[in-house]
Image 1 (cartoon, one colour):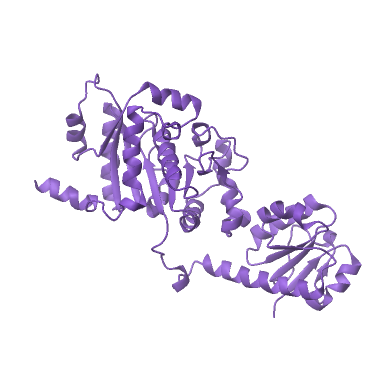
Image 2: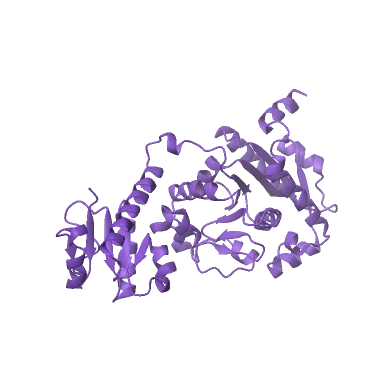
Length: 394
């Protein structure tokens, strides 16, 4: 039998809900920090007709502490609270004059949905949680050091994919301390990475999507926290869990990672299907990428595709492409030229692939987007680690 509790200061509502709740109805003042003395209810009915902000905060804390408890809200104008209620984890809203039969049906629907959600995110794998071949592609852009144009490349890849397939792509700023995807896309987000890794958004994809920031091209973005201090609360486990949810909702999940191999980046590598390794045309950058390649080999990281990209290529540079490939001991898949148009696009917060310019950098970025698109996955050459063995043998 479904266990139902009610929090309400209304004696009339407590009496009317007694067929559903029995004696488990409380006044708000009797519920401190949303803690239950016994087993938590399967469904909590929250009377939100007064002290709305406090009640919604209470629901948010409850969902955080008791993810297996569903929440039904009671308020006079359900439509007015719908979005705020959804974001804190409320699963349905009814007006106080709804019939007891309507309340009963809502309670059972919420209980069923909550049980399904708990099973979906259980740590114990079963047939329902086995890997889904229809999951989206996770495209990670990595570099051993900063200042190589990684965010510029990441945002252009994301915009390019979003323009080809509207609504298909989300970009996640995994440089969680100093990420600048928001600036690169000229966004002013209201919500950030921390908002989608806790509370109801952690367990419900519908709630999670309400925290995404939409770009003018149709791209969705999850931006880095506003301050490094806020980033401390985001763990590698949070990142892994978020990517699992995003892969089920989007065809492309583009990750702008932090320089090096911080814990969130390592968590992202486990989910990565397409790896873009980026460096600039200078000795420190090339040597750093060589070390990163060696580390990936040691970790046995084998995404389905790997693209080695050399950025900021300048014919006046003392290094040549052959010098770079000799140091890396593998070939470079794509070169991106240093152009004035790139600088202008960065300063304007408008990616080159959005503006449709004929800049040489835009042309090469379009080639990279084409190689990463799902339509080309089946026709891609053999996996890179086999190619590496073949090249070494030659």
